[in-house]
Image 1 (cartoon, rainbow, N blue to C red):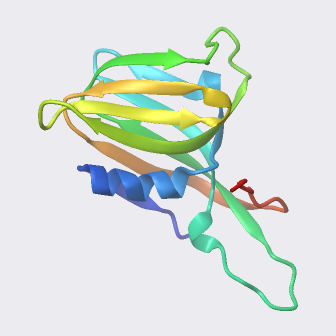
Image 2: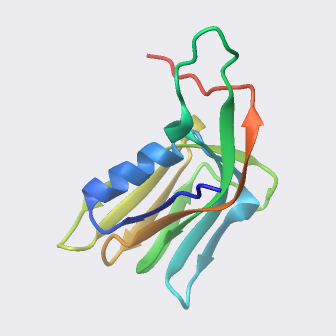
Length: 146
């Protein structure tokens, strides 16, 4: 099993993780903030963009993987457009962005479709993405309007 494990310690690394989690889906009940540990985490079903290949004369097979995305050194969490009282609501992740503050601190913005966002005030970027389960096939490849 080829499980993806990535770490980000700066904005450039975070962009790499952002590319890997684009189009991941999760439920609001799978978003957690552990105040004592200063850790924000989410479990997601990540579209495996790194597995995409052009195949001639064969049906394209796409993959999703169960993955965990963890942010450490989180000072506070703010969200808009997310109703945490509805844990079954599905969110589709678009991108992770870093807005620098007084170095090395800043804000990590987690942008979802429909305008929902989570903003993490962080001491510094310390993020990990880990696949935590086997892949499964999906017939649907996410599409983006230009």
